[in-house]
Length: 317
Length: 317
Image (cartoon, rainbow over all chains, first blue to last red):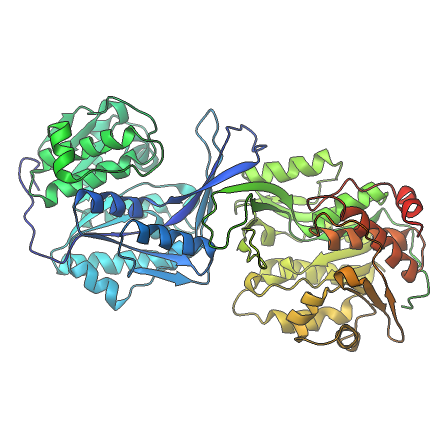
């Protein structure tokens, strides 16, 4: 892969298929340093689902594969997706409770509490395999990798994608607390980077995998492990995009920052839309920056993302 | 055991030791039939802990054995107990998340979502064994029975209690969703009733274990399984107390009902206090009814329970 070139795709049914968590984010209304706060607000959550919602608005035909419980939270999440016009035919239901993350906001970095359940009960079905084969891009997060059952689903998905020319994107958002204690998550993540076409670490993601280093050195480590294309997001300092031979830095397009939640998902969404729409990698990165700049104006993980044509016009990318 | 007689106890360090769940109850602020509501309020919860808080106020020396996570919710629950003057030396911490129950209020019976974690990671320690031996009564709920690790803790606890003359109380609050799918919870519960001195089923509890029947017939089934004393609570219709040979019905003492949450725990608390204070079983049942009538005046699982002397004076029991 070369950052100056376009990616060529075969004609396929789906532009993008994401695999990973759909969950309830239970977020405290007030800030609290000692969890003495009482009130929480429930929100739709899960990065792979947010990317599908965003990319559908931008104009891609995208779909999410995940699992929720046979419970009221599962009903809530599925209804939410349906209201957003998302195809729910790859969402399975299980007797495990719908996964939830509790976030108690604090002055420092809040420490989330992870209540895993249904999300790692995702099944590798015939239907999922068909959808992977019929997608231009398959994207997955680290959540399904962190438990054996769902890890096998992603591994089979990678195999199916490789056989059918489906490109693979991976969000290496590693959190130690999510992983079974008998599995070395960092080693596992390193071991699958060679199968991946697109990887988008943040500085924090890279530090959790490799320890502290400069962005440029971190990118080299991903490339050495076999990543074909690395986009490293640096928050207000923009992004660096790199292939095996070249690195290029782009500035942020954000002028107004209301809330950074979901900015990474918005970047992925713009980036994937750019490459599917036939832009070069470099130009797709700019579309990603436009999408995240748009999202940053809104509070919450999901913003009313415009159509692709309106986004590129507004941000002149 | 004979309902007309007092229970005689050896002098021991603790009056009551409870084993079971401490957890966060996440309760919706508004009513919703389809989980579309947004706001939840976090509350201290767990019947075995509520019984300890109540009985301490009533004047018993009681203690709770449980397990919470190394997380903010664990900190919150432990601080709450400390603020209530409860000895936390039998609360262990684990890397699993603190257990939580989400209750979305609805016009019908709300269906809780159970997020189990730390509660079944309770350990059978030397310290716990010592405390069981040094207690007049050991009480447990069905939560620890529902998973293998904590079930073993209760089984060892029952053995230690039997060896040291500690009486055993059991709250058969069976919920199918709590149990591992490879264990028949109903059969297991039936199998341990023979070790139990006090059992207090509600009509719903009995129906979940035996199917629908009259209260009198349900009580006979508990007695046939080896229960020495059955107290069946019938809500506004009072309670029936029974030993092998005799059944007696008592009316409720409640005149004002604000909220039934925690009424069962209040009954247990009054009942245990009555028998420890040297009342006959029949009279202890009246103390239980007084404690639940007191609690029913307040919203929430825990009311500002008075001292035993004030409670029996007020309700003339």
